[in-house]
Length: 156
Image (cartoon, rainbow, N blue to C red):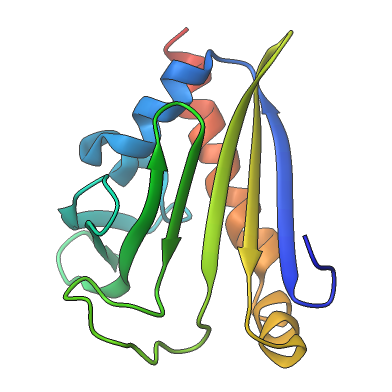
């Protein structure tokens, strides 16, 4: 974690690591928490493997969907770590996504109360990190992490 380039979020989720992993790797579960409610997420492509696609769309009304994320999984270490980037799109083409190019690393670890969930979102330069923070990283990623926790904790 480089504080000049990276943003991070950490939370204890009161559910087993396997449940958190499943919510991250099952497209139907992923769609339930990935965008802040009341927005609706539709998963277009989801291939949880290195080099696999991660493509989502979002909607305010559940009818008209707009592009949300076109990314590629870089690392998928079962029950431990997921890394994806939007610097390379789902067709493996260099991308210039707006508003922020990033690489996100999600790690899961056992905790006495469930799972330590940590997201580190890396940026190429301090200006990109600053812009992502100003666009609401803490609120957006915090909200979807809370939604993820609510989903898996309710299933306990």
